[in-house]
Structures are given as C-alpha cells and as structure tokens.
Image (cartoon, rainbow, N blue to C red; front, side):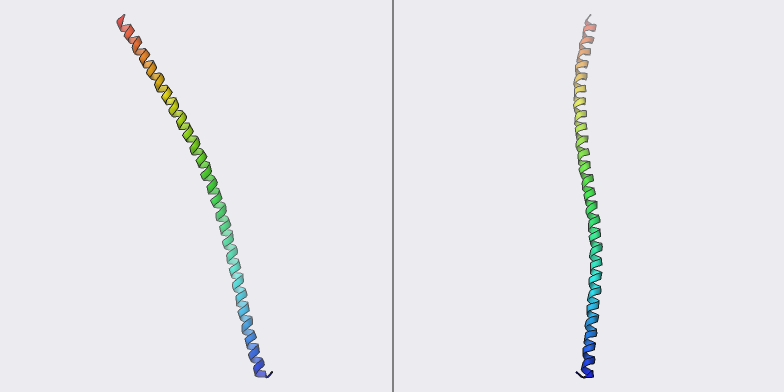
Length: 100
C-alpha cells in the first residue's frame, strides 16, 4: 500500500471515527432528553392521580351534601305540616273562644 493510499485510508477512518463520535453524542443527548421527558411524564402521572383522588373526594362530598340537603328538605316539610296542624288547632280554639 502506497503512502498516498495509506493517507487516504487514514482520512476515511478519521472521518468515520468523527461520524461515530457524533452519533454517540447524539444518542447520549437523546437518552438524556428521553430521561427528562420520562421524569416529566412520571410527575404528570402523579399529579393526574392526585387530581383524580381529589375529584373522587369531591364526589363523595357532593353526595354527602345532597343527602344533607334532602334531610333538611324532609325536616322542613315535616315542620310545615306540623305548623299547618298547629295553625288549624289554634284557629279552632279561637273559634271556640269567640263562640263562648
């Protein structure tokens, strides 16, 4: 192999080494980027899970609140019925007192 051919081969090898080095750097950079993205996805997953738990708790609270409102409405209905009965009894009593 002549000196000129040897230099040409060396130049090609040098270029190949440079290309391989650049590919390696690109792979490392990509791996780091993927790792950062995976960390972000993990953080978002945790956040979404926490929000889902909060929504579930709010659902339970809304159910409890609706039950309390229903109980209050039932109590109000009973109080109105009792008030109506008391009013009727008082009206009869007043009528009896006025007649005598």
